[in-house]
Amino acid sequence: MDHFHYLDDRLHCEEVPLDHIAQAVGTPFYCYSERTLRHHLRVFQQAFAKTPHLICYSVKANSNLAVLDVLARDGAGFDIVSGGELQRVQRIGCPGNKIVFSGVGKTREEIRHALKHGILMFNVESRSELYRIDSLAGELGVKAPVALRINPDVDPKTHPHISTGLKRNKFGIAFPNALALYQDASRLPHIQIKGLDCHIGSQLTTLSPFVDALKRIVTLVSALKRDGIALSYLDLGGGLGIPYDQSLTPPLPDHYANALMDELSGFNLTLILEPGRVIVGNAGVLVTRVEYIKENEDKRFVITDAGMNDLLRPALYDAYHGIQPVVRRFGREEEVMDVVGPICESGDYFARDRLLPAFLEGELLAVRSAGAYGFVMSGNYNTRPKVAEVMVRGDRFAVVRRRETVEELLHHESLFRP
Ligand code: LLP
Image (cartoon, rainbow, N blue to C red; front, side):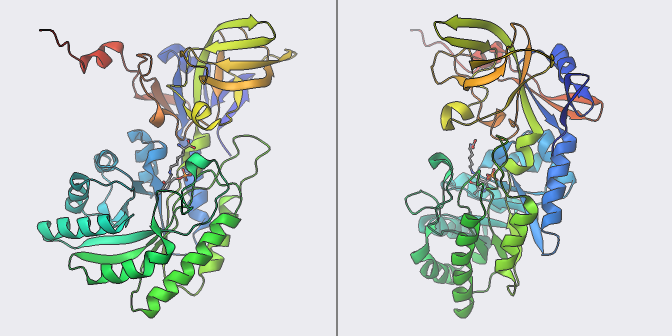
């Protein structure tokens, strides 16, 4: 459920018409609904209410400080994957005991930074990383709290680029090596074993891969217990999908939570979840203006002022995003078209051969479900400044990241003239 809806044929975010925002900030821009963010977090929290848990929102999905701040105020912790993300959550005042640090390539600098701040745990991805953390913790005279990220070798049945739980993926510690590495970890002087972590992929639309992974993980938790290694936390990562397309019916947070909790009854573990997309995906849209319409033989192209540098998902994953006119006109015909950006790449599109209302030059379109992995994956290709981000609360809105300027982009560069 989200708070984007038509009122008097104009698409609103909560109580604000999107064309008002476009007038004030120009296009393209991302627009986030605070009420939707809060609602999604609350639904997720309530789903796990019956068990001790911590929701660590996955910062990578949308790291705007205003988004993080809203979620933190409602009790979320954070899953981070870089020193940069750590600085973001520090900026909003998040306490260390609500931060988990994931990622396959943590640098020495990032590990030191996290050890100094003090975090709940590192989700360790390899033997080398474990030994690196142990030695850096020793230098700082502290004990590092860790979970080992285990790769359960389960197919999440999602796009190959966002599958992480198969043995051919770079993520996690191979299941057969897990027990031995825990035993090693238990002997390292500056390591404190806190838990076990597992994340098998993103945009999962069925429960069975989560349950299959958990069944394997649970056998490991029991084996560890027999070996005298008691865990306090079980981090099950993120990955719950959203209905980008109405034909998709991913499980609701309630069903997801119940399926997980069923497997865990009898274990005295605090659950950590790292949802990203399910919290922010449908809380955001990308608003863009139609610059041109052109017909080439049998193709109709609607060319917008936003491009793949602003929203990469269709180009990278052939992802589907709903597209709606900001001002709805009844009785308008529908046509098959490609909605494309201005970038010099044929992969620069938002929709291909899709039946949509016959849009007009100059009109505003909303690209839906763009709150997750939208702005954060944007870039400056074609020397295009990153777009503005706006947050709406009720009948008010604020720019929470202003549009970049070309001047700012050029500022980082210098000439090299003899
Ligand atoms: N935890 C870990 C360790 C992760 O790697 C991820 C996502 C999450 C949590 C959050 O997953 P979520 O709940 O959002 O599915 N750019 C891609 C998605 C990449 C996901 C990367 N890892 C996309 O646009 O679909």
